[in-house]
Image: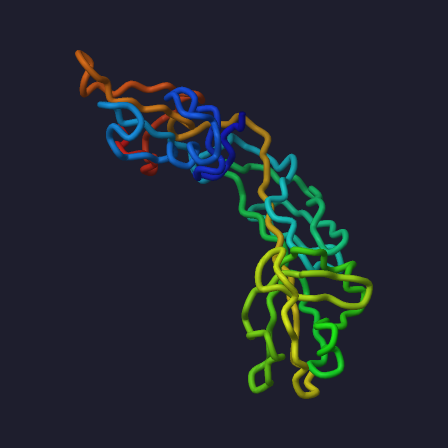
Length: 269
């Protein structure tokens, strides 16, 4: 069973909730149940759905940062990355084999009442010559220490400077996937796990680059945590003699509803 995450979406909803309405607890039913607004979709005469607290609606009292969770490790990092945190905390990120493996709490900060934004710097672009670095025979691009930056299935964006000619098989500004990487070269694919793209070298130009995907992370705060309203609610419109009555099963503590943003199919009280 999964528990509610810090994003208001189906992937972070409670997987086991589906079983409460006689549905198999799988991701398909999890998605179907989340935010359902159709009466009788699952049980005749009942409107049932899952609703969650958005991260922006969670608050703490005089919190400080205790840790970070990496939500996307990114790709293409050749060195540790700078991290920008809103408020008065400071942090930096550690990179290994092209990906961000941890975000370190340098200064925890204080006085936080909401979760701060966290921004990890983008990886540096890897530049190469469109003629000498491209193999028409092997469909590879030569990059120094390629497999220390990129691993198979990593996302990368190919970019060509204005006025230059794109490599045959690639389009500037398009995201591709690393199909294979070794110590000196990479191959690209149009889809994750797809076949290597047939490359044709362009003229001798250096304004060509591959840029990895920017990593992301979220902060966790100390302090007393509260929510503007119930975090996870199973709402049911009663049937029979209870028709029209709204039942609630609340799985996290209630807080004040004053000023709460709209999360459900019903207006907040």
